[in-house]
Amino acid sequence: MIKEDYHKGNTMTSNESLGTNHDNYIFNLKTLSKCANFLNQYAKQFLIIFIILIGFSVYGCYYSYQIPESFEKNLANLDYMHQGFFNYSAIAKPSIIYNNELILTNDNTTTLYGTPLSRKLVEAINVGFQYIFNQTPILTNLTNIEIDYERRAFLNCSDLTKMIIFNDPILIPSSYYDTIQVNVTLLEELVEVISFETETNNSNFSYHIAPKITINAIIRGAGINLVFEPVFILFFEEGKIVLEGFRNDISERLRFIEKIDVAWNGIPISFLRRAYLVVLFTLGLSALISIRSILLQVEKKGLVGVFSWNATRQLVNIVTLPQRDERNIIQMKSIQDLVKIAKIFQQPILHDGDSFIVDHKDSRYQIRKVPVNEYSS
Image 1 (cartoon, rainbow, N blue to C red):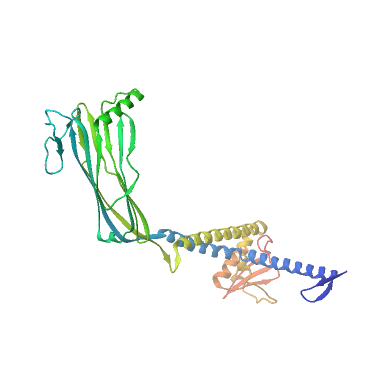
Image 2 (image 1 turned 45 degrees about the vertical axis):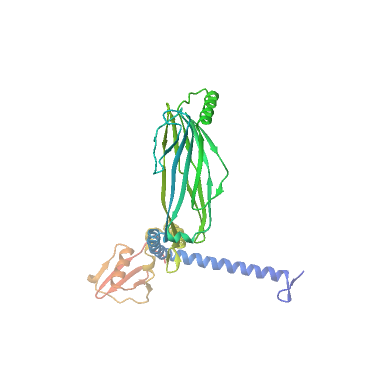
C-alpha cells in the first residue's frame, strides 16, 4: 500500500508513516514528561515567585481602583431664564357695584377694583400672557432654534382633572404675547355637567391656565431641550374668584462637559483594571497548581524529603576520608540537622558508605545510616 505525500513531492509506505507518527508521539510524551518533572522539581521556587507577583498585582489592582476611570471637563456654563408674566381684565355683567365698566387690574397703571372678583357679576376674564426668553451672550451660538408654544388649561373639580388644549403647538419668537379668554358662565355650566355625571358637589373648583413652551436648539453640536410651564390659577370659591400666579420665572444653567478617560503611561485605567484582574486570576491559579504539586510530593516523599531536597543536592561522593580526632567528631541526630550545618558553614556534604559528613576547620559533623524516608538520593 502506497501513500502519496503531495506536499513533499515523494511517496512513503504506510508502515513508514505509522513509524513516523509513533516517533512523534513518543517525542511529545517525553517532552511533556520533562516539562512536568521540571515543574515538580521547582514547584517551591515557582510558588515563591507567584506569591511575590501576586503581592505586586494586588497592590497594582488596588492602586488602579483608587484612580477614577474618567473625569468631566467643564467646557462652558450657559445661563438662561424663562420669564412668564400674567395679567387680566375682567368683563363685568351690568351691575351697580362695577358701574357697568371693564374691570382692569394688575397692569401697573390702573386698578379700579382689584381681587377677589365677584363670581356672579363677572362674565368673562381675559388673561394676558407675556413670555420672554433671556439668554447669556454665549447662547447666541444656538443654532436651529425652535420655540414651540402650546396653549393649555386644566379644570380641577374635587379629585378630578380635565385638560383643555386650545390649539396645536405653534412656533413663536423669544418674546411673545398671548391673550386667553375665560368665559365664566360657560365654565360654570361645564362644572355643573361634571358634577351631575360624577354625582359630586363641585361648587368650589379651580381653573389653571398652563401654557407649555418648549425650546429645541443645537449648541456645540449637541441638541438641547428646554421646557417651561408657567401656571396662572383662578380659584372659584363661595361667591368670589381669586387669582394667583402673576409671575413665573425659571433661571437655569446648562453645563457643557467633556468626558475624558484617565490613562496611566498611555494605558487607560479601565483596561489596566481588567488586566490586573486577569493577571491576579492567572497567578492565583498558577500558585494553586504549585501548591498541589508540593502536596503531592509531600504525600510521596514526606515533608522532610520535600523541603530538604535543595540542600541535599550539595552531596559529594568521596573515595577516601581523612581521619579526625574522635574528640572533634560531632554526631548529628538527623540528616536535617546536618543540612543546616552545611548551610551555615557553606560546606558540601561528603558521602562515604553509610556516613554523611560535613567538615569545618577542626570539627567534623556526621550522621550514619540515614533512613530512606528522611533522605533519598
